[in-house]
Image 1: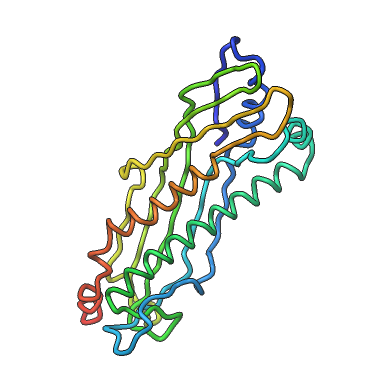
Image 2: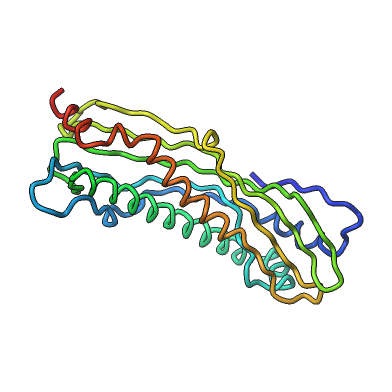
Length: 239
């Protein structure tokens, strides 16, 4: 949903930028990322093979304004394609980034467990789903002679769900569960610096969002790694 911001009359110069930022704040992307990045154990004599389906990801996140001239952004806001394309591109990039982080961390874990990840032909199949929302909270606004500065905190919310099931047609879930991302208490600081002469806007919301996505991938794995250990998966194959 759009971010609602309140401004003091003491900061008239920064208001146009912040109003614009609010209008482009959130955009969602839904889809399944390619499974080719899964990389599990590649050595000989794996403990078992596990089929990993593409990671399903849905993200609502702020659209970074980095590198865009304020006047250009204001002009784009009146068009049909400019800002929409910008939001869609940023959201897809965040989805791809989270997918990369998940596959890297899970792949390293499965490598340690000697679990080989495959596209098909295994006794078990792993399904993963992320629904992530990143929200901004302004903690300070400074209006200076040369630039206007906004500082804030970005916080991660949402849910991760997993399901391990047999590969037979109509097989039911052998184990499933979820992780409440809000309970992980993940935050990252950001700042936006807008020159008063209409120059290039500096915005670290992208870096902050990427740090949160890295933390999400790592913390989610920490929460469920006992379920995905080789011994636990072997036990499921005996059911």
